[in-house]
Amino acid sequence: MVHGVTRRAFAAAGAAGVGAFGVRRDARSADGKTLRFIPRSDLRVLDPIWTTAYASRNHGYMIFDTLFALDSEFRPQPQMVGDFSISPDKLMYRFGLRPGLKFHDGEKVRGADCIASLQRWMARDPLGQALAASIDEMTGDNDPSFTIRLKEPFPLLLDGLAKVSSLVPFIMPERMAKTDPFKQITDTIGSGPFRFVREEFNPGHKVVYVKNQDYAPRSEPPNWASGGKVVKIERVEWIVLAEPSTAAGALGGGEVDWWENPSSDLARLLAANPDIEVGDTDPLGTMGFLRFNQTQPPFDNIKMRRAALAVTDQEDFMSPLAATRNDWKRCPSFFTCGTPMANDAGTAALTSKRDVEAAKRLIAEAGYNGEKIVALDAVDLLANHVHGLVAAGAVPMERRESVTA
Image (cartoon, rainbow, N blue to C red; front, side, top):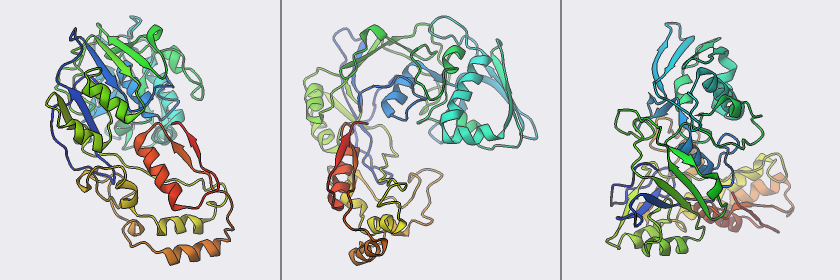
């Protein structure tokens, strides 16, 4: 949100998904101080620890800050943290916060705030839960420092603190962070680059943020989620426009400045406008998953899940969404292609030819007799919605229910 798209080019999308295109106009609003932005979906939950929704995560990045952040090489870099040390046995981590960190209410960020925030995050996040099992003690009070003592080494500790996507370990005031992790916080006091304007919050229409005048960015240049977050505008307005053609029209007509996540076909059309920049804001692209509820019939039977895999082709899901074949590629990996964790172990079924006869045999062996299958379709997220329609068409269903994400 702090820095705009700088490339007028399409890059090849990764991770068996379309590229995460962003489009913006060359000029901002008339006063030059307000950025009007179309988010990927509506903001309904203000607690980024309570939900994995990307809109809530992005909201979190606007108003909160993190102890560490990943750079473009996936290396954890200090963000709120200034100095830190790790004992030779990898069991004691000492962290000192950098000077000048204050919450929006003027209170200084303390070690106690960091500990309470991490405890709430660890209760909800899978990586955080694994880290919590290795922690012996966390200590910190009113000083701008805290320590983590482990029972056994946990090599991903800094990576966990630098986690960039849902769920992000955002740092909140201790009073907020002590809210039950399974209940939503109602306050929006952070220490990040923007302040949330609650009186202008209109779900389904507009979300407003203003510059945090007390925010002190790091001195390093920005590098993915790390480095200095330099705020160059006074106000950001999220304008919620769920219908893609309406969003494209608003951008083309100068009613908004930036569209976060356009479809690739509309992005290519908008690229013909000399006043609009189109850029690939995430070279990794996006990766979609079709997930079965394996606790409920008929997909509690593994043969039914294998039957679906036997007739699934990534091209069927990607072609209706992407404008051209250059906008997507196959990814035979359970972890995003192009990242250090990508590998093709055990994923031969993702690249093998469709086998309808094998699927029929598996369905018969599973004893499936036409029972109802319900698909949940996130209709307010374009990529998810298209994939939901393809999945629904691939399997006979008596009823398909749609939900908003």
